[in-house]
Length: 189
Image (cartoon, rainbow, N blue to C red; front, side, top):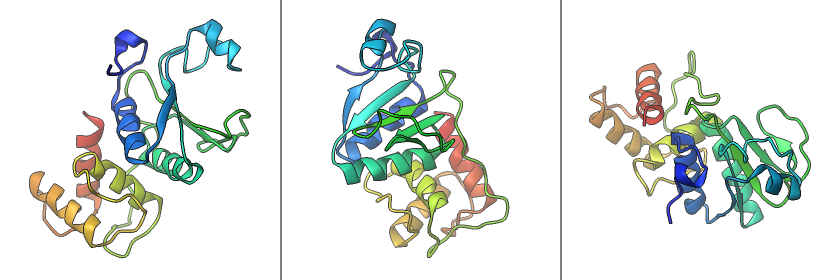
């Protein structure tokens, strides 16, 4: 059965993205919506994001969970990414998150923290969290794209394909216009 709002989950681009990416990383969904009483039974507050239908927990191989958590945080879609008892956004320690990755999103579908880089053009040879964000967005359109934070030939080709589709200058470089178009398409879904 597909996850839907009738099951208590607020379906947004973030919720859909998390499910798709978890599948790619080989993780399984272990928790979604919880009633307030059940949330308290499993150590929650009884009024957190699970009770509002705006959070998932995923479990699997430790290394895959670590990579997944970084990709979810870098995507900018989530208001919470918690793994190894650490909230990636705030750095706060939140116990009870050693064996799973918790992702939470805003019910209105607005994004978390992705912003357009002010002066950096990303291109072949670039590395880091912004490359992970770009790869994460492109991977929703080009399923075989590897998300590794390294802007190589495969990422460049995906960027060129996107630029052609978006009627932008096809140069394989993610500058201001490509970044805005990419995030605009991705976050408006």
